[in-house]
Image (cartoon, rainbow, N blue to C red; front, side):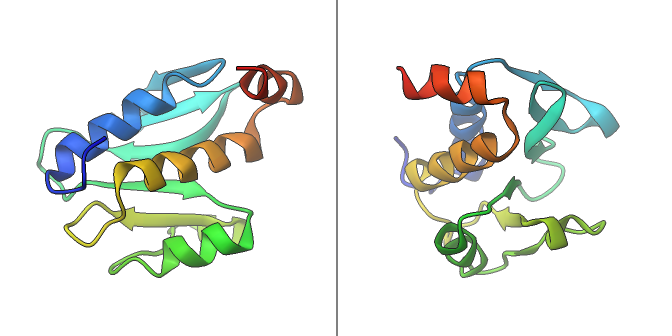
Length: 125
């Protein structure tokens, strides 16, 4: 696991982890990477070409994880009304948590939207 020094490397690590989750697949609406399960987005990864500051958006229902994510410098409730549903935008800067923590948040987001049978498959690993 990386320590968070190269934002694009951290983004790639988070992306790779998200794609290992049962039923996950990557799509590119609006030219940005999202990872979905059963047609529902569980992580927005933005663009990976360095043209925009890297960051992720995850849906966190767990109050502790949600609060922790919002405590990251620069983090904020996601735009377009998504913040009200628990989505948090986390910039991948030097102050961002380690990739392991980000991957935990991605898994939490996955568990919020994935069908029960896929969550059971994940838990069975």
